Structure formats: C-alpha cells, structure tokens
Image 1 (cartoon, helix red, strand yellow):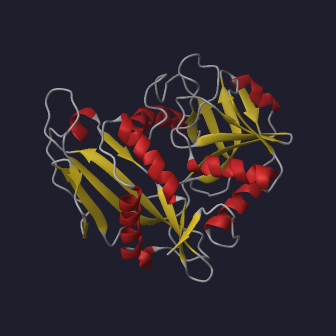
Image 2 (image 1 turned 120 degrees about the vertical axis):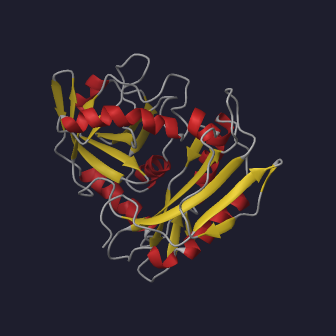
Image 3 (image 1 turned 30 degrees about the horizontal axis):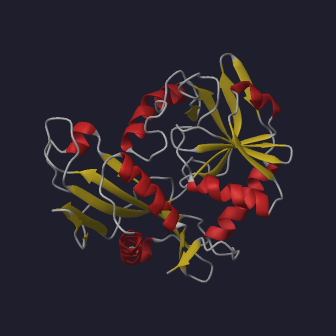
Length: 326
C-alpha cells in the first residue's frame, strides 16, 4: 500500500517545448531530471505554474480521471496571468492520457484507496537578466502513486491562524503558481513547531476574514448550509466546486460563498479543509489570538467525503460528466 502524499517513482514523464511561437508535439521520457539555465525566468523570477489531478482504479479495474477539463481551464487562467502561451484543451488532455497510460500499472488498487497523482507544470526556460517574460517554455507532466495528504487520512487536524499572508490583495492568490506555495513554507513551519498541522491564512487586507490554508480551501457546515469563503486571494478549488454541487444536489444543503469573519467560527457545526490532494480533512480546532474554536462533529463532511470518493472511484455514476474512463 502506498503511504503518504510524496513521490513514489514513475515510469514515464511527458515533456514538450514552446519555441518559435508554438508548442511541440512532445515526448515521453524515463527521466524526471531536465537541463535548465540558471538564468531561466522560472528560477530567477518565478515564472512557473502547475496543476494537480488524480487517476483512480475502479472496482472493475478501469482507470478513471476526475474533471481534467476543469484542471485545463484553471491551468489556462494561470498561464494568462503569468504571460505563458496557451495550449488547446485537446493538446493538454492528450498529454494527460499519454502519461496515465504509460503509468497505468502504478495506479494503486481500488482497495487501497490510493491514487495516481498527476502534476502538469509549465516553466519559463529562456535565460533572462532583466525582468521580463520568457519566450521559451517547458510543459511537463509527472505522475506518481500517492496515499493521503495528511498522515492519517480522514482524521481531524489542528490549525492556527498566522500573521503572515499567503498572497497579496489582487495578487496571485487566485492562480496556481509556485510563488504562493513558497510563501506558505515558513508560516507552516512555525505552525507545526507549535504543535499544529498547518496554518490558516486570513484575508491579506484586514486579517479578519478566513481565506484558506497553504494547500487547501476551507468549507464549513452551519445548520443546513455549506459555506465557503469568497475572496480574490483564494485559489478556486476544483474539489471545493465539486463538493458545492454535491452538497446541493445530493444532501439538499444550501450552498453559500461569502466572507467569513474569524469570530463567526463560534457558530459553525463542522469545519473542513478540501483539495485534490487532501480530498476532505476535518478540522477539530482553530487557534486564533488566544482563543480556540473547536469542532467535534464531522457527520456532513464525512458524507461529502464518501460521496465524492464514491464518484471518483466509479462506485456512483454521476450525471455531470466529471469522470473520464480510460
């Protein structure tokens, strides 16, 4: 059984270059190593974006992809923000399918509830000294089997707020770029040093409203409502978007996207962290400014978790066209 959300090896990696105004056909390679100029725009100025999605093995041994088209749309939003040239959806999806097919034997068993994590990325490769966009790029896709993002899977975690910001107002918070994750490393280290699993970022303008953790969106249950924070510094999570639809259509919950004041947590019944890697992880405690908000119930979150996983592993046939069978 694959343990933990970490690199466990791969068979083949996809690479394609952007040169002279177009993307090349691309190749499959045995190596996760590349040759890159130390003056590349990715290294010097952070011109780097990525995505994350998973392939699952169904009970009848099919390989299933969950919403890769949504990953394409978000990838292109990130590309536009960082002046990276677009690619067609068919080009992106075809590259994904090539990588999954080449790593088919690495998709964990249905019984293990693991998955093949797929990481598309684009980096600027031109040597630049002045601050400007690269004119050459590398598109790559790496896939590796993974287990749970948090060490115990669907087990409650403890968070603490932080005075640090993950992203600036009107900055890069809404796109999936490496810089946002670099900004989260130090605050998370401080949080874990104090005995927490991660830190919870507040809005960068007023530090009074909930944003997200370094790698997950936040969702809350309040009565018959599912509420998720709304802000232009939050990354739109495909998992969160899917959960909102499932909460409404399957559990008859009212779904709201709005600002959530940190002190409003007193009124929430359940709180969770969600994302591609974590799926849903319940939060049992949020520490903020000398006060602890505690959550002892995860009934609705567990229902949503089981519902989403059942769709991703092919146990439930969903009506939205989310699942691609290979």
